[in-house]
Length: 256
Image (cartoon, rainbow, N blue to C red):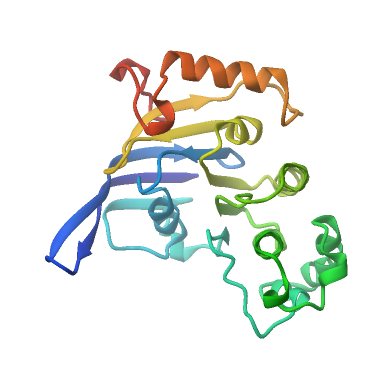
């Protein structure tokens, strides 16, 4: 169980010593095994929220608890950042193997690289890969240990649709095997509705939750399915500025 109760997150602006408030009054919980997408405009604090849940950022007012304890007290989550953060002096296989925590995971590195379409690049260095290929390596590194908690910050950004859909299906399979709890940041509402059990919509800065929506489309789903498109259109018809973090009235808002 993830429990988030953040009253305020701000950053100091060095040029005038003022504070920039990026998040306020963020309260929600995520059940074990739930796939939760976070959608909101650029700069609304989505990445800051992931950093707080991961334990990388403890400088905020409020609390984050994972299974009753601080994030740093439990096993580290799988975390895919917006940038790939690969070690440039290590080859692809070595970058993924670097984080493996047991022999079973190490034995699965080559198989996972094959699943994400990088079997011909296992001995390449990051500088020899395209941006999209580096993102795929970063995804492999995040999921190789099949963690119980997985944090993903726009993992499929800039990937071609067929490749992205292939990796979305792989992600669903991996999370299903481990019953992983997932927090997944995206700007793509269709992607969120395909992947998620639940979508949190966040307002523009300072970010607040304006809508907490349960996705009741049965699984397995089809990425370009009609049911996903109908729900997307229904949400945007009700709240045309939803992706900008605005809803028509407070009655739409529900925090889980």
